[in-house]
Image (tube, rainbow, N blue to C red; front, top):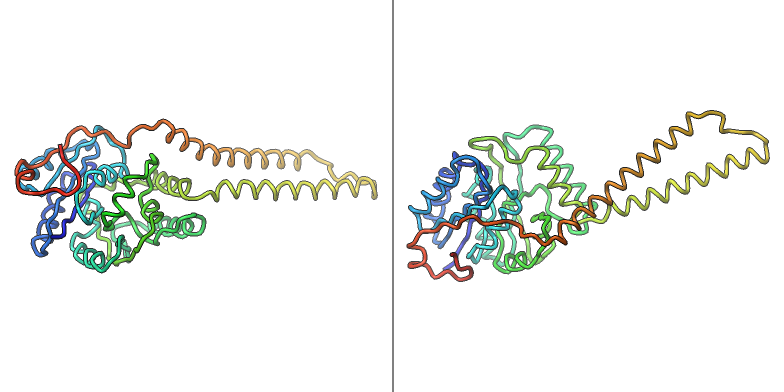
Amino acid sequence: MTFISVILPCYNESENIPLVYDRLKNMFAQNNFEYEIIFVNDGSLDHSQEIVENLVNQDKNVIGISLGRNFGHQNALSAGIDYANGDGVILMDADLQDPPELIPEMIHEWQQGHEVVYAVRKNRKGEGFFKKITAALFYRIFCKIADTKIPLDTGDFRLLDRLVVENLKKMPEKTRFLRGMISWIGLRQTSVYFDRDERKHGNTNYPYTKMLKLALDGIFSFSSFPLKISSYFGILISITSFMLITYNLYHKMINNKNLLTGWSSLFISILFMGGIQLIFLGVIGEYMSRIFIEVKQRPLYVIKKISFNNMRRESQNLPYTAIY
């Protein structure tokens, strides 16, 4: 029988966890799948861990993974992926913006032979104009400059075949951008469409600063374009400077005119070139900082506790990962 894992990273989601659990349980009750629901508590400061513990005690299909601190959304998803046992593994958020009722359609597409089924957002309810426009711009710019293309208007809500999961577990990079990593793997990928709902309770855990960091992680991890544009811009500035020097020399030697009559143009040129140099030093620094993070070889996350129902070991023959 098909075995499905659902991974839900949680950071201060105490009000949403019971709701998403109920909807997942009802959805699976209407479909003939064996399943597990993995809540990854990413260093929550509220009562998320206690609520997950209660669900674990009530339901043998629930697993709780508690991280030592807040390691971030992408690392929390990676922790769930490492411990998922499903033939198909579903990544989704716990705030109910990703509807559990879409999962049967995703499973259907997976059973038709697709290794990745990603959910494309037709509408994004409850989000401001600025967030919508910046997200749309990011995906379109990323697709233009990235070495690996990712589908437009998609988040992490997707279903992964076991083959994809095993290959993700072999990818050791510390700066995670799972959407790009999954696209890099390739294989057969398809989409389903949905209207993204508003967050049920609480505030978003992805403010603009985190969105910007994720966007930069994606660009610097999957594109060499910022380095290339630095080189192209340097060549352009050099050619322009050479032409201006030639023009000034021509008028100085042939027409006996001195075109450099003031300091304003000199100061503007110095400030302009200094600014450009600092920008591209920053670009190089972004790449170097990621190299620095990689070479330290620290783990992606630290697990404080894994919780599971004692009936689970007795009643289920888990095919891949032993839970301790």
